Image 1 (cartoon, rainbow, N blue to C red):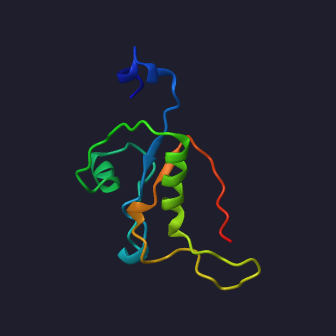
Image 2 (image 1 turned 120 degrees about the horizontal axis):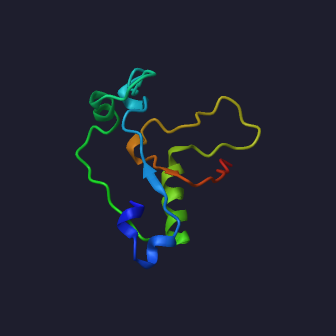
Image 3 (image 1 turned 30 degrees about the vertical axis):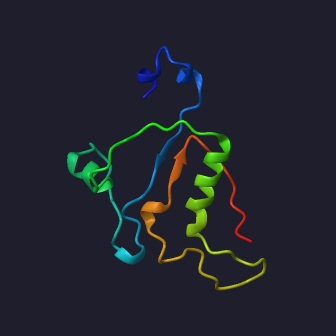
Length: 112
């Protein structure tokens, strides 16, 4: 992606990558995961990671836009009151493909 930005003002901006798991248990069941064994990566492994015909895109956004994106993504988690016990952490009705992970970014989530 960086090579596509050469000569543009955006070339020096931070570049983050967002991905979401398509197969992450949940309603698909406990065996609904992608398992890539050690060794060479095959076309079958890549196809299993990305099962829908989506196209990659580049977005220019502000920090506030990114914060809203992350807030939506972490709505996968239930609010948990401090000191509570046996509370489900994850909402099983939340589609795993809406739990975006932003590589190159670290943040903390307050579940209370």
